[in-house]
Length: 370
Image (tube, rainbow, N blue to C red; front, side):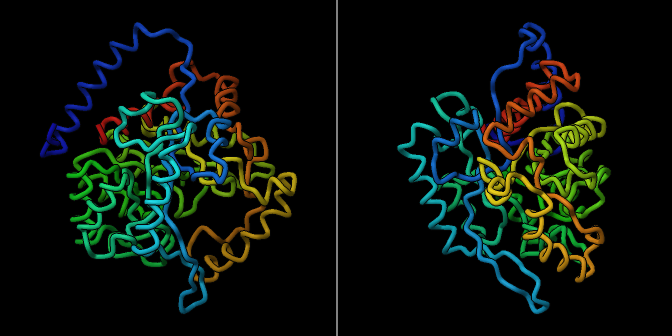
């Protein structure tokens, strides 16, 4: 089916689909399905961890990064075409014969095969360079989610952690059109506010903020502002709340309730269909913190040099040094059942939990990827 040519017709289509879904849901039982979808994860060394995590599906970043230093000695992360052309092949090969996960090409693939439906992602358009033909090359190899940028400006878009903010470039707009044509899900995580708003407005499919937190709660440019929550939700997209605690709260110690506060905020601004769960740590948790028994006071020290570099370079939101990295109760392989239980304790209804824990991801992946 060809994509609609205007946002108005797409929104009308989504609204009609939502009405039909609501009618269908009226006959469903109140108990939530045991379906957990992670909006940003990584392939573990031991793929059996995917089963232990209880995942039905995940968006999986397979990009290879190289840390470099700019002229001010600030760390930045480079993703080359050569390294990532090999990386996506390696990821697909690992999934090919695994009993725990499989390469997913369509949202409708979720649940069709035993194991976890795995949607491959790059966390930056850097591997594309200026050659948009590469988007099709990577799509043919299984790429289904593409993030515009990671923290910093690139050829496609403005990053969140820049002193001077900018949005989509002309190349970025062409790249977005190519994503829409190929049915690749556009991801605005790590982008500037302008990048988020411009992508949400220009895209002919929903866009997502796959992993992050709410700026209304923690005022940092890495977090999503309400304006972008509204824009993404109005287009049928999803905002994934992640596990990195220093962007969830400045309170110490961080708890699962701080995560729930961000979920509630997205629902307040964008509605229940707009919020989901992501990780952004290894599947079994942040390993260094786990080795320390989740001693945040000790574990946060490895993050402080980067945080101070952001502060010293004049990036707003980094004036207060963080005191923690993880929510100890969630820095574990079974975080998703624990979040589920926390939502139940917080008074969420079964159908709301179903949407938060996986239903919203399944909807948007199916809407965009088929």
